[in-house]
Amino acid sequence: APHNIMPLIVQPYLRPIVVPFIQDHHLMLQHDNARPHVARICTQFLEAKNIPVLAWPAYSPDMSPIEYVWEPLDQRIRQRVPVPANIQQLHIAIEEEWTYIQQATINNLINS
Image 1 (cartoon, rainbow, N blue to C red):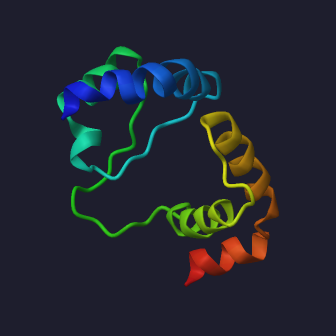
Image 2 (cartoon, rainbow, N blue to C red):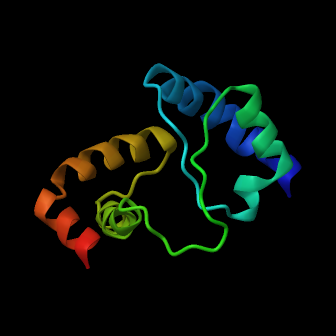
């Protein structure tokens, strides 16, 4: 339920990490119009924080190139020994594994 996202997502991630990063780098947020992303509590939060959101058709194919990289990145992290046991370890693992993905691999995923 939307009211549950405040303690689970907004407090630990959006406010201290995502919002400052977007604001510091003058970025625009892109999401896929999934119900949780367009819930009133989310849209109000983004508006209150002056986070610009890229207009995205409600029923469009996934056109974000990054979407093709998530699965290989997830597979690499799940194959780590030991598997990350907390958020800090997961953060480090994501950064490390991201650097190991070859640009040619990313290009092939995008072009496929």
